[in-house]
Structures are given as C-alpha cells and as structure tokens.
Length: 311
Image 1 (tube, rainbow, N blue to C red):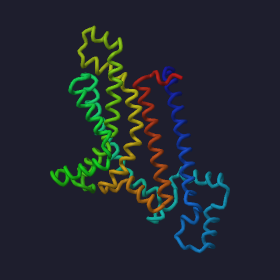
Image 2 (image 1 turned 90 degrees about the vertical axis):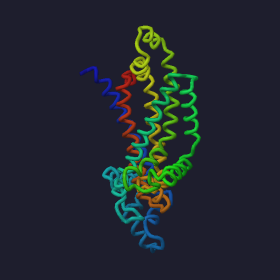
Image 3 (image 1 turned 180 degrees about the horizontal axis):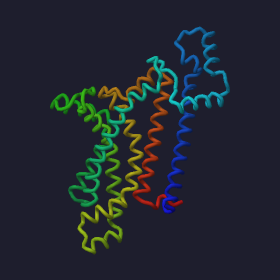
Image 4 (image 1 turned 45 degrees about the vertical axis):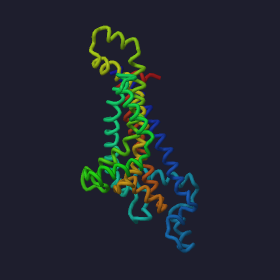
C-alpha cells in the first residue's frame, strides 16, 4: 500500500496543475467578453436604445469591478452556464455539448488511424534501417507532413467520392461519412508520431541491454516487443498528447470541408457571427477536454515507466 503513495502524490500534483490550467483558461475565456469592446452592447442587437443598453449593463453586472465580474463568471461557468447564444437564442453550453459527440468520434477515429499508420511504418523503418521499408516509410512521412489538410481533403473527395463512388463526399448519413475526414486529420499526427518512433527505437535498439537480449538467443520479434518498444513508448505517448490539439484543429477544417455538423463547424460559425457566449463555451469545453486527456496520459506515464513519478 505504501509503495503506491509516491504515485498518488505525483498524480495529485498533476491534477492540481490541470486545475490551475483550467483556471487560467477561464480567465482567457472571460477576457473574450471584452474583445469587441462593451460586452453589454455586443450581447444586445444592433440599434438598441442606449438607455436599454445601460439598463442591461447594470442588470447583467457589467458595471461592477472586473474581479467581481470574473468571480461571478467563474461560478456560472463551473455550472455550465455561459449565457444564451446570440445566433441561436438558446443556452450556449447545450449547443456545444450537442455537437461534442461527433467531433470526439472524429478525433478518436483520426487518432486510431494515425496510430494504425505510424506504428507499423515506424517499427519497420527502425527494424530495417537504410533498406526499402525504411526508405518507403520516411518518404511517406515527408509526403504526409508536406500535404495541407484542405488539399488532401479535396483530393480524397475527387478520388473516393466522385471517381470511385466508394464514400460520400459530405454529410454524416452513416459511419462511412467519417472515413475521409478521419483520414484527412490523421495524416500529420501519423507522420510526426512515426518519425519519432523510428528515431527513438533506433536509439533503444543500440543499447547494451538489447544486445544482451539478442546474445541470450531471444527471438528478434520478442526483443523488439518486450524490451525495445516499452522503453521507446514514453516520448511517443508525449507526442500523441500534443497531437491531440492538432486533431481538434484539423477537425475544424475537416468539418467545414465535409459539411459535418460538429463542434469545429459550430465554432467557425460562432466566430463569424461574433457569438461571444458560444465561443466562450466552445473554448472552455475544448480546453477542459485537452487538460483531462493530458491528466489521463500522466496515468499512462506512471504505468509505462514508474520512474517518472520520482521528483
């Protein structure tokens, strides 16, 4: 039981850091109210009588000092109350939560596709350096990193939807509608993760304990699986956490190109309409999700390598 205490302390520290990040994000989200100037005027329709604007400002508390306004905003945000959307005239948070499952499904599928491409290519490139699997994998990584998302999305629509008619060009009538968007957002994370995995595996495979394992007569596949991959996994997991932001950012482009009614498309519409309550809810939810995933990855770190919990 006592052996688990250092790990609990490490995880408690990471949770505290995550809560501080969420608190910092709430400050940024609160500041969004003032980006367009007077928040009372921004929340009311154009042409509203100045006397009505002033009355709304007092009623909404915008005439109070900023620390008081922030404390009130934070207490409401913790209950999911970001006010009413200016465009839809509905509470902002339910609108965001309604779009969340599709975007999470797209990001999750994109992460799965990225891993399915990066792991075999990265391992093959490290296992046969300088040979055709390595050259093929590295060429694929460079090509994927050099290809813009929107260009690949357009090309994928022309080939798989228009020419071959295998997949729908837009919309989400069934699960096939997620295939091309997921492939689009997976390219860059797959290339970045694959290149890092190849590099890290090459370092690990050159270590003395790997040569010792080979000298003991262990099969190469077992040495790779049980001794090399586990030690090479930690930086790869770190990069995957960073790639999560790229996946969510790529979802904005993919949802716009493929006309998917997800969170990214809603964010673009709310930004173009200057719908501040909706933007605040979107940013708060997205940031909280990224923080939660990073805390979950901290648990994975401890499982992969218990040394990371040491101060």
